[in-house]
Amino acid sequence: MTTTLIPAAISVEHLTVRLGTTVALRDVSLSVRSGELLAIAGPNGSGKTTLIRTVLGLVSPDKGQIFLAGVPAGRLSLSARARHLAWMPQEELPGDNVTLFEYVLFGRHPHVPRFGGESAGDRLAARKALDEVGLGDRAGDRTWEISGGERQRLRLARVFAQSTPALLLDEPTAHLDMAHQLEVLERVRRLCHREGSAAVTALHDLNLAARFADRVAVLHHGRLVADGPAAAVLSPVLLQEVWGIVADLREDPRSGVPYLIPRLPPEAPRVPFRTPPLRVHVVGGGGSASPILRRLWERGFFVTSGVVALFDTDHTTAEEFGIPVATEVPFAPLSDESRTQHRRLLVEADRIVVAPFPVGPGNLANLEDLVPFAGRTPIFLLGMASWPHRDFTGGTAAAVRDRLVAAGARSLESPDDLLRELEPSPTSAGTDGAEPHGAAPALAS
Image 1 (cartoon, rainbow, N blue to C red):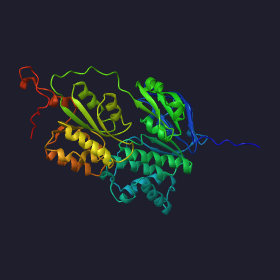
Image 2 (image 1 turned 180 degrees about the vertical axis):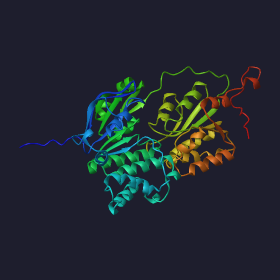
Image 3 (image 1 turned 90 degrees about the horizontal axis):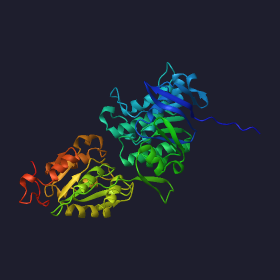
Image 4 (image 1 turned 60 degrees about the vertical axis):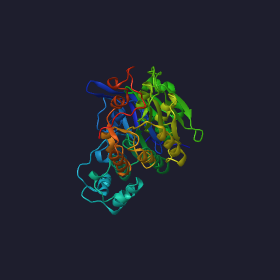
């Protein structure tokens, strides 16, 4: 009996690509089969986007071949390639201010006859895709009027509507809060496992890649340095050699999925204080508070933090420096217990610092818990300029922020600005040249 081998949905063989004088990809060979989700990981500049654009035909290789379902990609017309591959770029500014439904309907273009129009089936596919990404009730809204995170989901809906056997997704979780990151990748995985699609997605977050991908391929300086299941590929050695980061490798006891916890460099010397240190509470999440925690700890402040999820980078940083932290379980809304912890730390704080963290429905309570302290405890809001890109609450978080500002919270741009506000002032010091940390600096109106 003869067994017929089904060709890979996408296959690249010995691919080398030059961009000007730079070799962006060097002799890369990999493939992804129907029903499989492949994550491409690597530092910035490692070749992830170049690989995707070359498979699409937007970049010409110097050497090597690309096959789509066993057919050399060069033999396929542009429309034939579009019926096989759907592409979600990293960034794409909408041109005309069309409705969300019209934008997603563009994804059906490869299936529309040359001199025909969209069919009822095409319109149904577009509506189904909008429902799939949670935007079905927004179909009549305009593309210029939605947030960055919603626009990212809209691009994914267009990819779904294209109904191709293979998908190329370049950083599909960019601009998304934690809940939507998990939701998007779960939908892509479901499309692969239940409907037999093949997907290649470039991801920066190795833990997300391990959680959702069937395989992880790692690029470094344009070379493929690892390719296989996450449990076989991810290791502290790989993170050190490719990203230059020291990490602990752990395993989720429920799923068996590996995850990496980056460790900070060796501790910097801590500045000694002769007076009781000021107590500074930092609200953050998603790694936003880590540089602030480190700087405050080094300068000798008594630092607390929360509420952040266990295994969040900010939680790891707090553990590294012995900083008390209000903790929540990963991927869960803030519980009454964690909020009680948080309020206790807030009551004890002399100053409150809000890091530029992404705010979604699950962690909005971190901001809401600050309202009773506004006007009583000095509050500093860092990174206000980035607010529109990290508010995923439809404006609810912005309203809480405005209440804090109205009550006297101050906007600062960087940890350096924060330290200038918190450090003792020699000009106003006593006979020993040090202002007691417990004394609150005057706040500008």
